[in-house]
Image (cartoon, rainbow over all chains, first blue to last red; front, side, top):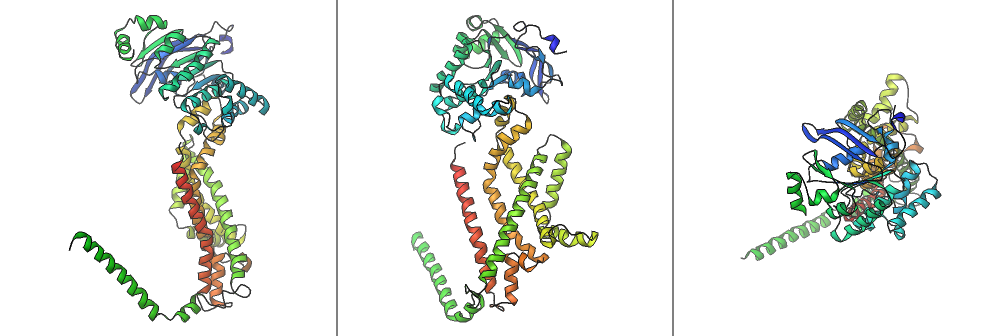
Length: 253
Length: 268
């Protein structure tokens, strides 16, 4: 059934979420979310802490198990038991707030491990792709370094290169600059902006309003487990319609 | 008298008592007799003393048995640790039951069960005779301890590591083998080295099961030299065995201390 649901590329959203609920015990974190990211779009999600924005992002590749609702990746319902979740995940790059590089492996091995293990690429091919992506994030000279010897900003750029080395169809960013010293934020955002310009589909949970305004195609404001407001970043940021959006923006801008 | 003067006086008194005790001991003790009983010149000769058998049979076998018990216990412990962390509940129950059972028993009881209990009950001896049976008993017990050490190590690897690997599409098995276990092993090297030192000492229990002359470990060889051989009738062979044990264990305990210091300094 899944294949017939997928018409020509481009007409189906890269990410589509319908009626998503998530609760931990009796605590409801997501209270019915409808959300989509079109192919090639950059969607930024903002909101106060505890609003459920990270949980929403982590549901997209089912690192969090949804309690109810549908998650469609390129038209494919990934909660369907017949779907190979690992295969779907390999097509969704993910970047974490805490980088999560593998500390026991060199930068190059961080980038080739999943290529070889999941994609089944040979060593030479994997290394070549890894080097291309390291160059893209400006860290070619660090390929034999270990993560502990890199700055936070460098680690996050390596993490982006690691995700890109799988040639993903889309990228998820979970507060990618929140753990960084202020002077290191710019380099990471620069790499992300470059990716966006190349047409990468991106979902970004962030506190960087400047990035959301300049790079985002759509801005989603969440609060209390629901999507309160969404629209063009310029509109939402300069002319918020809801009281909760206004109050949040007045605190962060 | 001020506080400082009183503290000084107490110190002087303490040293005086110590010095008096040493002097009395030195005067009262018959050093020649003590030396002959604990460090007999007949036993400590290189050519004709106890060293030959103690080292080439006893120490070599002790190291060999420890290595076998450690390797077996590590393999068993890894399986148990993974079972304990399994998403399948019955595996968790089985592993927990096993670990609690064998950690609650003296190793000697398990070794005797393998070496004597099974042969009496079923007329069947485990491979390797009594030594083999004793080693299997040691492995069964060591596995239970190492399982808990390994489980703690695996759980000390941050959850983000698993999430990163899974988000790249890696399967659970590959994630465990390529990402989690290499980091877990690094964390448990110091406690596992301690485990190794404990096993060296536990191989002495094999003496109680008995062994052929060439299969004896260090304690058994030393015990035999108490009643036969050049220094029979003295405690010399036990002192020699103690020195040989320390030659193996002291560097290892120092190594553990060094590894722990280094780990504490390492920035994660």
